[in-house]
Image (cartoon, rainbow, N blue to C red; front, side, top):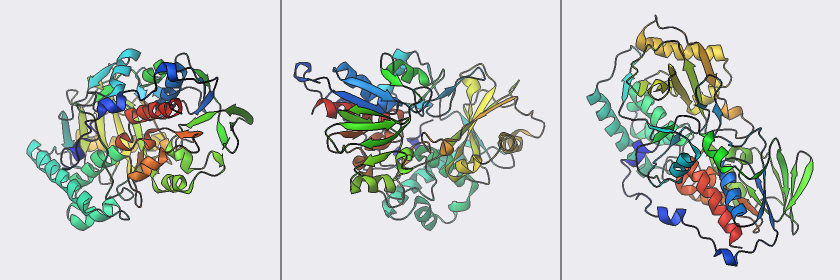
Amino acid sequence: MQRRKFVKDTLTGIPLLFLTPTLLASCDKDDENINPNGKTVVVIGGGISGIAAAKKLKEKGFTVIILEAQEKVGGRMRTDRSLGVAFDEGASWIHGPNGNPITSLASQSGANTFLTSDDSVEVFDTTGTAYTDSVLTSAENQFNSALGAVRNAGIQTQSFQTVFNSLYPTQANDQLWKYMLSAFLEFNTGGDISKLSSKFFDDDEEYTGEDVIITNGYDKVTDFLAQGLDIRLNTRVTAINYSNLKVNITANGNTIEADYVVVSVPLGVLKNNAITFTPALPTNKIDAITNTNIGNVNKFLLIWDTPFWDTNLQYIGFTADTKGKFNYFLNIKKFTPSNGLMTFAFGDYATVTESMTDSEISNEIMLNLKNIYGNGIPNPTNFLRTKWGQNINSYGAYSYATNGSTSADFDTLANEVNNKVFFAGEHTEREYRGTVHGAYLSGIREAEKIIDL
């Protein structure tokens, strides 16, 4: 799914990033000028940003320890194979594979990819009637224009929804428009439009090329990168004291001493004050953590004995009455042997689903599918789900600019403190926030800061 497609195609005056070689090139000193002097770096968090930083630092001779709270590495790149198919609970796609560092890493790791064509889609209304191609094309063109209009009229303190409703009062409650606002924009950014910044909702950058999905598990990439690293699993960090010459990290009640620490936990962990910093972080850093937000997108996989949908389609859309409510389906039969559909909950409705039982969710999904295919379709035989908002290791899916924030806040999130405490993660990579490649590049960036000291 091209999460950036419906915004980037129409927002003019925002050039694509032509500095990819600069981002990917090493800023390191020559190896002969690097002298780690036995220095130790503790990396907090074994997601792709932490692993990337650790790998880079180890290559340059530093002693590196990764402290990971979960039972395995990967962070939000988690794969559930319990149903015989790779269900990626978090990251699924490589967004813009051309020049994207994840593309080559996926190839090296043995991760298989498949081009999920955005054009292979049919959208149905609540009566089960399919929208014609001409209606969809016209609506998407108008929608793209509306995104540009909202951004131009955006005010830092007002939400996307507030500005959009003032500009397009008729479309605000139109079912097809609610579908596009949800399946396109809320999926893209991770945030509900009522909380999404009207001015900075999507001013980041992208690589080029049609998005590809990893079909045998995104954890292949992190498992590959993590090889040979010193990783302490089931080790939860609760405090960082950087008041002295050395940094003291408290984890599972024990203290580890390091020269530097890389904090690569998700934004939600920082927002929930899960780690105590001594001294307190600088005011501008605290403000940036407060100002930005982490959104919620939940995923649901349903498996049947036999398919009842058009298996030639890649995507199935549904203009649900409730915004964000199981309105977008990915046909995994296109790239796996399984008769399965993956659907999503976006924005505020993603949070609603976390208080629902599996049975309640399955029934609600089936109501949408029955509106399309009739009451005679069978119930699924297997079901998997996510609850990212309740996950204490992330408290959400990925970061976004909310009311009161600016894109500069993401730069502040990346600032190191006292040349001792460094910060990585998708939320610290302004140009590529909310993406796997953004997280990976942030880890390389922080490693290079330490190498260059």
